[in-house]
Length: 204
Image (cartoon, rainbow, N blue to C red; front, side, top):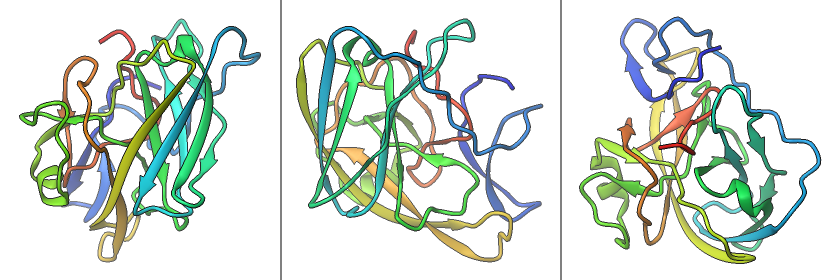
């Protein structure tokens, strides 16, 4: 399967939200975890507003010659999700988020780190994130043993998959405040970035 960036786009033919991946099969697969996490560890505490019971996972993809990294998932409980990850994997890390009742878009929504045209350090409203045509899910990472990240989550309605006549609620998640993204920006649909496979940004 191609490791190209996956971005959500509407398709009039199927009346559903799918990912634009030329020549790639549709799959809801996630990258495999790197066995034997060793070395320095970082504890990421996410203070989440608006997504109690949601599941968050940390991921990193470098290139096709290196196994993709995927952390254990963490459920938001009492507004907090905690992830323990190798510090070395934090550069180019991205975070997936699923609601307790997963959105039916045949893709995994990601947490936005920055919206193009909005300076890092901004606290965005729901409307501002939706209005952003391009965004990033890539985090520059850290060398610290512990970090705290605030995340705000709203919802947006999108055509469901495979029945595009129905609607599904998709998490609209962002760092609050935003941080400077690693690398460039990708096209967002209604402010949302999502992936069917991996999201390569470690070498951006």
